[in-house]
Length: 625
Ligand SMILES: CC/C=C\C/C=C\C/C=C\C/C=C\C/C=C\CCCCCC(=O)O
Ligand SMILES: [Fe+2]
Image (cartoon, rainbow, N blue to C red; front, side, top):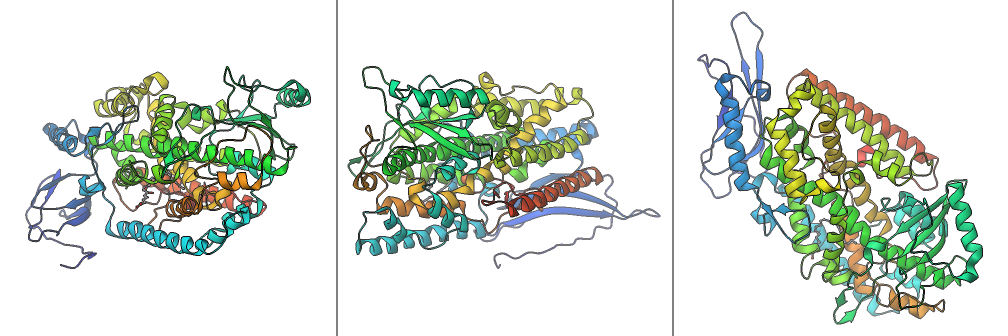
């Protein structure tokens, strides 16, 4: 039997089968690997003197071995209390089986729970990468490793002692914006811009007071006055990396790496540009002299090194907190809870499942190759060697529900209504669009709040996410039950937003902002400067070495590049729902996304730096990379 064969099978049945509730599917098992993927079964019922009727049984699962798959009819959930509880019983059996297939595991204490699987090979076939994705994933990694070998060979033959020497490895696949980063990375407005619209737009806040950790030496009273004035005008902002304080730095091949925990104060100009005013690289520590404040007026290399330290710290919080924890790991919790608590005929299962595709496998791969013992973090990142897990733990301990919902998050950070905050603008638009889609769907199945309150499955799902998967996150605002349709819609909107828009916003920028390594160094090999005497030798000795820089470029490209098999948001082919109600809601969703697409394209045409990570055609329907 050939691989990748697609076939439609038609079977005629002449006898009257009565009302159709289930179909059962079985395949004779001959060879070791002869599984088939079944999309759906459609039955056309011909009734005398009546229109032909179509009855659909969605499947979208592998049929393997000798097992029998029993598929309830697409509208079964609406009839769950009828037909002698047959659908109810089917759902219970299905969940019983799924709970043995998808089990929770504690990979590391203090992190959200994950799926129990030591490697991707342990995952059920239904959630594995399909052949094409696997070949592409593994093939591009291998090609990237070849690039590294060539780059190392090349740099062996030349010198590595000026910033321009990073050009020697800046070849191969890279984006237009990555080239722009190489041109502009030293500019202050470019540095400030990244907090609004770069790879990590999640940290910046508008200041409501001067941060207590900011110790301003008496000789800088001018700065103090300026900061206070900006604060009063409402245009003072801060990026505080205190979460990194106290984290152990990595030791790479016997060499200790170093970490900082900076605070950056920025001002917003009337034209929307965000400019750094001061950088404090470490919080004050009793018994030590106050940490210096680095300023734009410092010698240019000093100021550049201070900014490079901030960019390195941002790399850590971006990858660990914003990316891994707040998209990948929480999406995994949604995925496992969905498999364990919601039967296939449940409307919330149908709504969410296209947004959970491939997430369990990519995360399992991350746990075995990226954040594992000896993984990429240990090899080339200064939080590696265990510090990265402590960052994840600290970030988990302060993960709030509000921070996953842009209307709340952006309000809390004082970022509403800023014309140059493009991530914020597009995220809010997407939140509204997704929320309307979710509400449209939920209202088809839940006619009033009471139906939500008395749905034991959706309540168990909520509780399992908050109490089990997120390890008691009710303390941080996550719900343990839904009292109304509105609460359910808000939560499901958060799930879909996180798995689609938010991940795309956080993931794609790796390609642009991480290719020019000095803009976002993966590690720092010397301690942060404590005086303003900085030389080029110090800068070069601090930034990643050739090997570290090459690996950063390869992984950033691997993870940030356009995925060949990507499904854009709202365009999955699976049809789990049947009937005109959902079709109309989906159509509206796609139209809303198209409208936003056109708005973003038109806006970007007039911009010096386009912001396209939240352009709907670029948003993946689930976390797959
Ligand atoms: C420059 C980027 C460096 C690190 C990226 C950090 C975080 C990314 C967060 C989530 C990515 C999720 C999954 C990636 C899974 C696997 C990566 C595989 C790399 C394997 C390299 C190898 O040695 O085979
Ligand atoms: Fe990712």
